[in-house]
Length: 411
Image 1 (tube, rainbow, N blue to C red):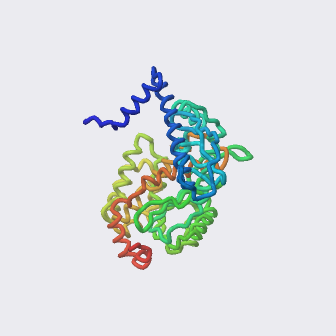
Image 2 (cartoon, rainbow, N blue to C red):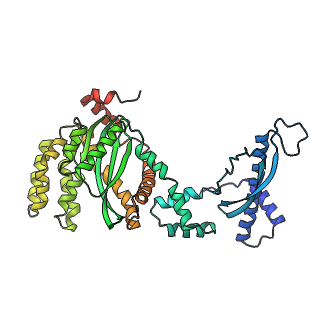
Image 3 (tube, helix red, strand yellow):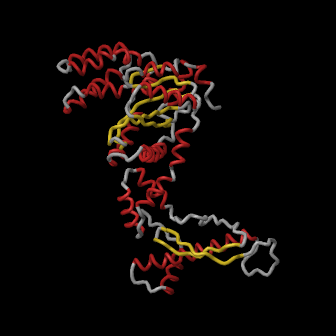
């Protein structure tokens, strides 16, 4: 691998350091660089004030404004090399608001963003404080970490109330449980999640909600809220077997095609199978619902029943939901694959559990929402492209649901 060429200016910087500082250790290099960093900031602030006033300091030409320089104030800023004290120029009108170091801002190293990134990955406030101390060499209090995290609360409200698209060809609804402290103690609460795939084939988190437990009544409220935020039509919706949920969906989106979630069927059936056989059991049943045709699926299911006949309870889960499996074969294979794939909702929940499981019980709903929101923002960065084979899926949707889908496409 070719060695990366250094910027020639770095040699000049090093010459300056050795000529003006007694450098004997790596730490002394950092201290010298911190001094240079402060000097550079001050020079940039002076240049900004020159531009703001319209004339340079000590300039002989006549000023075009009555506003004048008004001395300096001292400010401590937080950089990647630690704290630095700088001298900030002022003007008489107090109208100067520098962009390099805005009023009220002390963090010039993006440390707040780094703290939020660590927070999003489920690190405790104590761990965050220790990491900042190790990397930057200064202490940051528990209260400061909390205040930085609280800055995203308005963003959470904005995200949860934002306008949504008019149509989502595919929507996945599910709830997971996480411990949250209440006045009566710590208990498991239901975190409701809704994911949609828009007409461009891109996934999005439509929202998240928290309730005491999962109920069709609360799902009804959520669906009503989604509709009020602009979602007029859902073509396919994947759901679990919660009693009353089908009726709740039908009340708000009567034209939505409801499909039982394969993830839940798999989860409900494998509880009756020894763990050592889970992989084989899953592989066999996947062959059934991924069959080329319904006739092939029937044949494969008969073989499946024969092979796993000693686990009657597990087979009953699939027999009782066979209508949902049959319904898959009403649609072309590419649409079918999006409906039955477990990745959309399962991987999303797994990503959330990576951070919620680290935290123990959340002290409040707000604390949970802060972590979920930051994690959602991270997850959405990986959803920048349409789902696989979306062009083929879209063609099939247009053939089957032309009037419902074409009016929402962007041309």
